[in-house]
Image 1: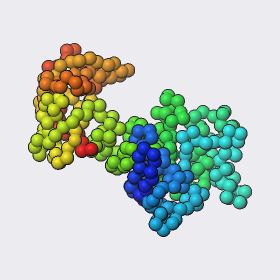
Image 2: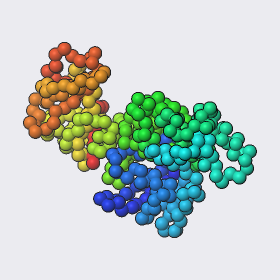
Image 3: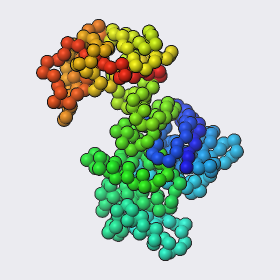
Image 4: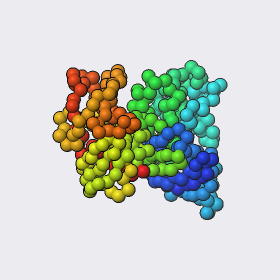
Length: 347
């Protein structure tokens, strides 16, 4: 199965301009709140209408502005999990799930599908409970069961963990990931959390102010985000303006240093990024004198802030993150960084 999306819509302060293709597996739309991620899902589901463009799922055209095609939501066979799960509070688990089978007229077939879904979602014994009597994770499974019982061709999840307490999220990520693998079709998930995107998805599409900046395999994106916005969204703490001075060399004026890069530097370089855990006391390459500024303690790690010897006084300090047991007794006089760990950013 495959999804093709090429849509455009004016949205007040910016224009939604999204073009991508996705295949079986979980694809995540990653971006800050208000960048157009959820609106993109609503356009695919048929809840919202683009100004122009084309949406196609497994060869079936869901929307095409030129051909005047705009299938209603109930004919798109797309399952949509809302942030708050949208369960009916006065209905039992059984009744909520059966809502997904309202077009099935055969009672025996309805009952068979219901029992199958209760078993799949580990909801057996909770059939007569109402949503208020369920945990956050159980509510999520009921909402998914109501969608999946109708056998959609694709699932869309809008911030699926936002309604859950923080302590529940880690265990439910694993649980939901396993369920989505069993689903076996295309899944599109919206999140602003890089941890959720990394843990849940096969591919990530980065969005910023209505634009889709890039779409890559998950690990490839974190290794080479390509743009400032993507670097920030994937957690890079050290980003500074830079310019190309050689095929494998860049200058970072704010830090007063030059860095050798493993990746060839293209024209149009805007900045470089260095992830906070990439600095190393032993590394000889890209090694420069540094001066300790301050530190921040986390439960299991420490962030040491420093400045390069020739760093501009108005530029922010550089972050070096490491586990507490590896914290040096004395702050080193110099730090190095492998050329392979210099992120080249072009937007």
